[in-house]
Structure formats: C-alpha cells, structure tokens
Length: 145
Length: 145
Length: 81
Length: 81
Image (cartoon, rainbow over all chains, first blue to last red):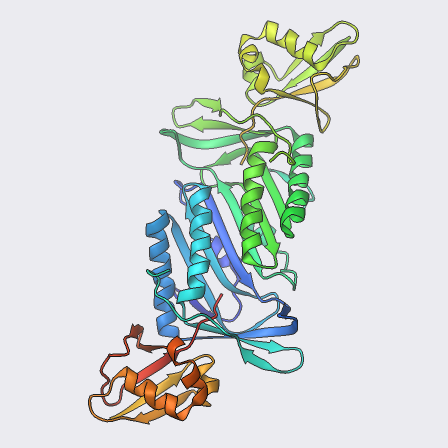
C-alpha cells in the first residue's frame, strides 16, 4: 500500500480493511463518501477532485494524529483526487479502537474535520456537459476543528 | 452470498462491501465488532457465540427493516456464531444512505439495538482454560429499542 | 402434558443441560413451566424475571398456554455483538 | 520582486489561469499580493476574505513577507469529502 493518503482515482475501501484488528481493539468503524448522481436537483455524472497535494497530505496526517489523541483510537484517512464517477469512493476513514463509542466518535469527528481543514475541491460534472466548482467553507486548522 | 444473517465462524467484512453503492447514496458507514484479548482484566483467547437461530435471524431482519424506516437508509446486519479467535469479526453492520448523518445514526442505532434484542450469547474462553457465559441484558423487542 | 425446554446461553449452566423434559398438568402455561424449572434449578429461580421464553421465532407471554409435545426455549439475558 | 501564484479550486476560474505571475515592490507581504490580485480579478476581490494562502505545506499569515521568486498558493473555501 502506498503511504500516501491522497490517491489518484477512486478508492478501494477493502484496501483499508486488509490490516488485521489489533488484539486490544473491539470496535471498527468505517465511513466512506461516494459520488451521488444528483446535487441540488442537477443530474451529476462525476466529480473531478482537485487538491493542494502537499498541504492536503499534511492535513490528512494531522487528522489521524489528532483523532488518535482525542479518542485513543487508531485512525486512517484517505482521499481521492482526479476524475470519479457516480458510486466511486472519494474518501475513506477507518477507525480501530477498544470499544464502539470511541470508534463512532472518532470516525464522525474525522470526516467532519476533513471537510473543513483539507485543501480539496469538488468540480462537479453535470449531464448537460457543464462543470463547476462547488462553494466550500473557508479552510480551518485541525486544532480549530 | 448466503441470505442468512447468522453465519458460522468469523465474518469477512469485505463480503458486505462488495455490493456497489446505489447512485443516490453518498454515505457508507460500517461497524464491525471483533474479539478483544482482554475482558475485565482476564486474558481472553476466544469467544464461542451461541444463538437461538430462528429468533436471531428474525430479529436481525427486523433491525434492518426498522433502521431502513427510521433513517431512510439501506442497512445490512450479520452476526457470527461458533468459535471465534481474538481479532475475528463477530458482527458487521453496513449502512448506505444519502448523507453521512443518517449513515452514522443508523449504524449506531443498529449495533446498540442488536445488543439488546438478538438472542445471542458470548461464552468467553480464557487463557487459564476457563470459560463462562457473560452476564447480558434481558431481551427487548426491536420496537422497544 | 410433556414439553421440552431448550436451554440457551447461561441457562444451560443453570439447568445443567441443553434440553430438559417437563411433565406438566393440563392447561399449563409458560408461567407454570418456568415455575417447575425454578423449583428444580435454584440458579434459574434467582434469575427467573430476566428470562424470556420463545416458541419458534416468537417470544411468548408467560400466560401463553402450552400444548402437549411443545418445545419452548429459554432466552436468558443476551450478550451478542 | 516577482512571485508566482498557484490558483487552486475555484480561484482558477476567478483568475482565469492556474498560474499567475505578479511583480511586487520590495518587502511585499502576502496581503500585498492578495491586494494586487484583487485589483486584477474582481471575482477574487469579492471573496478575498475567504481565501487562505499556502507556501509549501504551511498556511501563512497575510503579514508573511515574501521573497523574490517565491511561489504561493491560493486556498479558496474547501469542499472535500
């Protein structure tokens, strides 16, 4: 597996599940985001994900470290860049922890934080041939989130 | 894939991820429970999961249906029976929904409800050769949960 | 009437067996069966209010009337997940 | 001094290019660079307060002093996930 958290093309969720569960962990929580076929009433055919690669890699690593510290969990985060089709996975968060409460909390925190702190931009492609960058949220630091 | 939600032996999580995401879904949430190596300070070598098969199958199906109705999500639930080793997955919940909030909520509700409504019993095996059934919680119906 | 009781989970330990046969009077209910088991098995008696009874894939009320040859299942507190 | 500006995400649309060169005076800061861009690109001017600036893998303050030949990146509001 590449050590990069930013990957070209759709993510294969199974890749992040291949690692065995640590023997002291009882809870595995996973979130994956996939491309939907409609957004704000427009038919979507795909999304081109753009990133500032160096800062995005750093922020994804910071989310893993901060989640580990806040929730006492082992957290892996990955995000796709490039052209994705409807149904493709753009983001995967995997959390392994002692019990389910921390697993869910860390997983939810990681995806919510990723959306506010990682320099990635969705350029949606529509069935009518148009494309546009979505409105986003001003970037924050991981500590602020 | 078997249509049974109760499976002999450890679950292979990837099996529940093989199905493609529906095009109108953007959020996939997964929870898996695995056997830990310690419980209440005792070294655990494995768990033998016992079930009342007919009622357990029915309750697992009811959890899927109730979660679908409450959260507008597509929910799959499976549980292992028989001897599991440390690290083996005993339960898998997979939720596919429009957005992440419902995906997390349905996944959390499903595992919390399963633990109170499905006739399954853990018989823990310890490093010293002893075994015991864990204390549990009096069974409830899915609607009560 | 004679019925068969399946002892699930920890109730196997309390009753010392996976299957127990009970001879009950006419028009016996689930409550009568539990009462008889509680007389025989003190560990079950202590936990009687935490145990449900299933027939097939249904949980039945303690007022449920049993038939000769019926098979019931003891469902002690559950610990899945 | 001359610097290069990478335009990420929607800022590519606002500035009409992925890379923009700017000629700035001595001792110019990130704020000066943003000011110059805002003069040229009205769409960027409208959103100036929502845009961060990165150098390498750091977000820098608007008070950061630039060097000749430096490369900065515009980080408009993010929409990953």
